[in-house]
Length: 346
Ligand code: GTQ
Image (cartoon, rainbow, N blue to C red; front, side, top):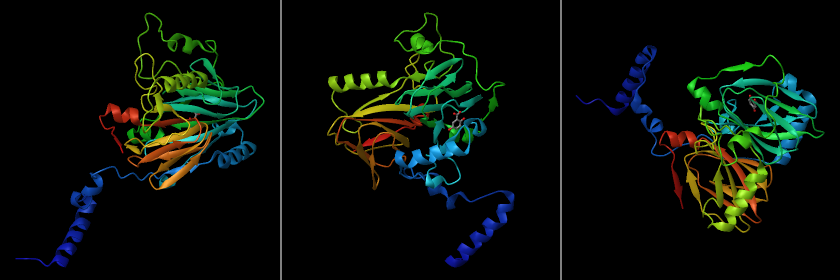
């Protein structure tokens, strides 16, 4: 017996309705979206000009103190994830302001965080008893479950980009957080201690890594910039990425954080990159110089401190009119560990 097509469709709908109370769903209705032929990111390309961020951030500074807010941050929310506090499907971004004399009280959480300093100098993040003072372009890490507080003894507002793996920790339902009993942790080691111990191409002779996270938690821009400068003089330029380095855990050679990969790249004057796409959606921040990046069908003109996001598997092309430096972060480290990361050029 053959059943007419419209009857079949109706019978199927009735069947779906009948099985729904048993928490059953037909795979064949969703298979193609569950197992797509290639990534279909919800994430969309977005550019935040720093000139549009700075005013609102300073205004927030008049409305709430760092202490009351715990962290005075404006979230950079991708419009594709309205209400979800995500910049990409797997990562969070925000811009944080600390005014002179303020304290953002000590806490710790299982989420890993990076701070990329945008403006101002002289504020600090204390991590596990050591302070890292901020200069523009510095990368500071607060690894999972390390107590951290931010403080400012300077006379100017200090602003930085926060990158956290909040959506990854949410996905895995592994979020824990606790406050320290005091606002600021005790200083246990002098400034620069970790960098001297672990970041001078040497390690303490009996040192054994205890975690995946880098024991270096401050990567000063002056060193990063010099490395890029020398790299640019001594090696051919990559057609897609210019001169691009990744921040590492010097004890393992792996990425600096177990869930967030971090990068700095120099695009030499006149660079006209070729298109490239990769499976790791990436957050970029301009550091020096200016340029433009074509991301899918959008063209973003960026300069220092502008922030933009490139979704997974969307072609991206960078250009620079003068020497330009871009910081970026993504979940590439997770994808590499899982054998999922891919890049396609051209
Ligand atoms: O500085 O500890 O942007 O816990 C979001 C959550 C910053 C921080 C954020 C946080 C922090």
